[in-house]
Length: 404
Image 1 (cartoon, rainbow, N blue to C red):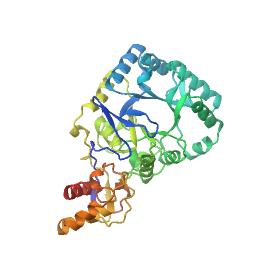
Image 2: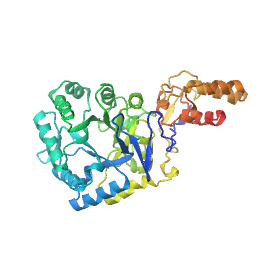
Image 3: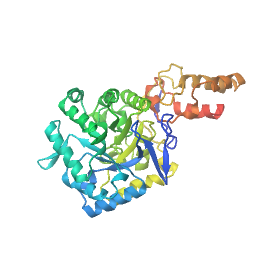
Image 4: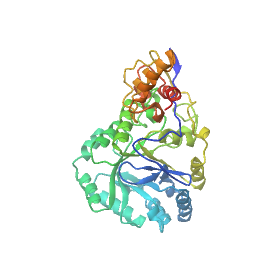
C-alpha cells in the first residue's frame, strides 16, 4: 500500500538526555560536544562579509552579538572577508567563539583548499593577524569529502601541523568539515576530532550513502527517509558528545526556501529548516549565511518565532511502499538517541489500546529505563523501520496512556 511518508517533529522538543541547554534572553545555548563551550543555536556564516564594507560589517556583527549570537564560522580566505570580521570584532573578541578553517588559502584571486603545510601555515597565520587574535577556539580542517582524502590526512605532515597548533594553544579544539556522511562518520570515530561541520537539511538527509549533494544526479534520487549512514552518524555524535555544527541549513544557496528549486518540491521557511536541524540531539548550532543586515534580521526572527512557524510536520515527503505500517517489535529502529526501548513501548502500548490499561501493564511500563515522553522526535528511527511505523506518533500515544 502506498502512502505519503510524513516525518513528524516537535520543534520545541529538542532536549537530549546527554546535554543541558541554557537560555539567555531569547537565545538558546547548546554544548559544543565535550569542548566545554556553550554556543548559540543559530550562528554566523562568513560569506557575506566579502560583499560589504567595514562599517556595515561592524553594524552586522554588533547586531549579531547583541542578539546573543556567539559563534562564527570563517572558512573564506579572502583577505576582505577576514579583515572585515576582524574589524567588526575589535573590542568584543571575547564574546565570539571562532570556528576558523585550516588548509584554506587565497590564491590567484580565489579561495582554495590546500594540504601543503607551508601554504596552510601562511593561510592560518593570516587568519589570526586579520582577526587581531592569537588563537581561535575551533581549528576546522577544511573540507574532507572523500575516503581517499581522509586516508591521506591521517598521519600526514598537515595533520601534524594541526596537532602542533593545538599544543601551542593557537587552536583550542580540532574539527573537520565534510559533506560526505560516510567520511563524517569516520571522523567521528577517529578519537581526536571534537567538532564536525556537516551539511544538513531536510533534503540532504535523503541522499543515498556517501553521496555529495552537488554530484551529478545525487539530488534526483532521494530516499523517502533519512539515510542509514546519516542516522548512524547523528546517533554516534549524540552518544559520544561530539559537537556538530550545521552548514547548508537552507539547502545551499537557499534552495529549500523556493518551491521551484527545492529538491523536495515544497518551499520551507528558514524557521522550519532550523527547527529540522536542531531537532537532532547531536546538533550544537546552525550556521547561517548572512549577506546583509536584512538577512540577519530575517534569521533573528527565529528567536520570536511561534511553534506554528517552526512546525514542518505537514510537509509531504516522497511516496514509499512498505509492508504493513504496524510494529512487529523487531528492534530494527534501535538504538534510540535518548535510550527509549521503542519496541517494548510499542508492545505495551498495543496491549493497553487493545485490552485497556491494567496495573500490571502500567508497572511494566514504569520499570522501563526510559519512557516515551523522552522522545525528541528527531526522526532517526523512522529510516530504520522496515514497516513504515509512525514511531513519533506512537510515542505520543504512549505518553498519553501511561502518563510519562
